[in-house]
Length: 317
Ligand SMILES: Nc1ncnc2c1ncn2[C@@H]1O[C@H](COP(=O)(O)OP(=O)(O)O)[C@@H](O)[C@H]1O
Ligand SMILES: [Mg+2]
Image (cartoon, rainbow, N blue to C red; front, top):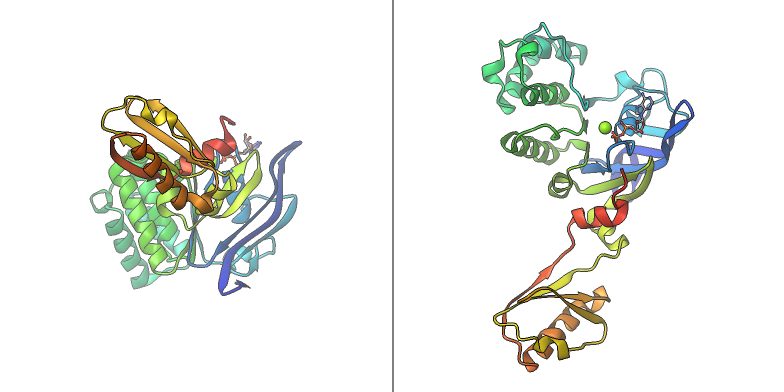
C-alpha cells in the first residue's frame, strides 16, 4: 500500500488508457481509493466503468498508465495471486450444473480456502446473503437476483481486503438492495476497501466515501462527494412555503439572491455566494415577512448527487 498523508491507498489507477481496436474506451483516467473506504464509480452506460474494473483486476490488457492494488503493480506476472481481491462481475456466471454450495466450494478452493475454514466460510456467506434455502439448488434454476447474491457470496468468500463490485445492485429488488448495502457497510466497518460501479446515484450517495465520475472514458472527477457538488457549483436553495400567496414577495429584493416561484405558494431562493448562505437566507426571510408574506415554513434544500450528475453529464449517453 502506498501512503498519502495519513491514509494508505488500496487502489491507484493512473493515466489508464484502454483501447478496443481504434476505439478509446478509457482515456487517461486517474483515480485513487483509500484503504478501508468505499468508492463509487459512476457514469452513464458505456462510460467505461466495466472496462476500468476489468483493467484494474488485470483481466484485460491496457495500453497505457499504471494500476496498483494493495501495493502490487497489476501488470506484473503473479499479481493476481499476490493480491487478495474479490470481484463481482456485472454479469455473474457460474457452471450451471453445480449447486450453489458446490459452486462456492469450488471457487473457494480456487481462492486458496480449504478444509474446515472453507466449509465455515461457505456457511457464513450463504447465511449472510439469505441463500440457505438455495444451498442445494442448481445454479441453472436460480432467478437473476439470487444469482447476483451468489455472485456477491463468491466475491467475499475468501475475505478479500479489496472488493470490486461491478453494478452490484442493478438487477435487485428493494429488499435485496437493502441487504447488499448493509453488507457493504458491514464490510467497510471491518476494514475492507470496496470499489463499486453504479448508475444508480442514490446507492452511491448512501454508500460511498469518495466518488469517481466517468464520462466517455474520462475521469471527470475523483474525490469526496461534496467536492463534486461544489465543483459543478450547484448551490443550496432556500425553499419557502407561503400560507397564502398574494404576490407580496415580488417587491422583495436582496442583493446576491434570486427569488423564483415554481408554483403558487412556493418560493425557491437561489443564493450565489455559498459562504454567505446563512446570512443571506435570514435576510430574505426577514424581507419577506416585512413585505407581508405569511411564511408557513422554510427549509434549506441541498443539491443531491442526482442534480450534480445531471448538471455534469447532462443527457450524455
Ligand atoms: N470487448 C469490447 N470490444 C469493443 N468495445 C467494447 C468492449 N467492451 C466495451 N466496449 C465499449 O467500450 C465502452 C465502455 O464500455 P463499458 O466499460 O462496458 O462501459 P460501462 O460499464 O460504463 O457501461 C463502450 O462504448 C463499449 O461499447
Ligand atoms: Mg458496465
